Length: 166
Image (tube, rainbow, N blue to C red; front, top):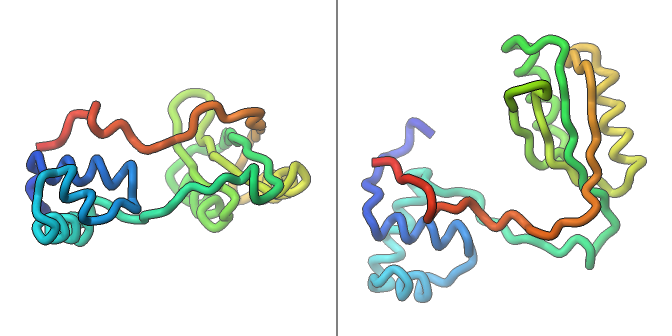
C-alpha cells in the first residue's frame, strides 16, 4: 500500500477508523453523529480514508453453528527449511486454500499458525495431508489444535488502546 495517498490521521479520522473497524455496516448518518460531523463531511472523509488504503474489506460475521456443520482449528506448521524461498512457497500454498483463513508467521519453535475452518475432520485431515505430502514445502511438522468452544470472538483490533502513528 505504499503507493497510496497519505492522509493526516487527526482526531476525527481516528474516530472514523475506530468506529468503522468495529461496525463496518454503520450508516453514514450514524457515523457522522458519533464523530460530530455533518453527513457530507463524514462521507468525504470516510471515502478519502478508504481511497488512501487506511481501511479495506468490509465484511460481516455469520453464526456458523446455526447455518452449517464445521470444524474450527488452529494449525501449527514447522518447516525444515526456514529460508526465504521456502517461506514464500509455503505462504503461496496456504494463500490459495480458502479453509486456511488466516496465517501468521511466528517466532519460536513453530514457524506459522493458521486459523482454519473445514466442513469436518476428514476434510481438515485431507488438507493437512496434502500440504504435508508436498515435498517442495519442506513441512517438518504439523500440529492440529481443534477449537472446542469459542467464548470470545475477535471483534476487531483494540484501536482505541493502541498508539497512533503520527
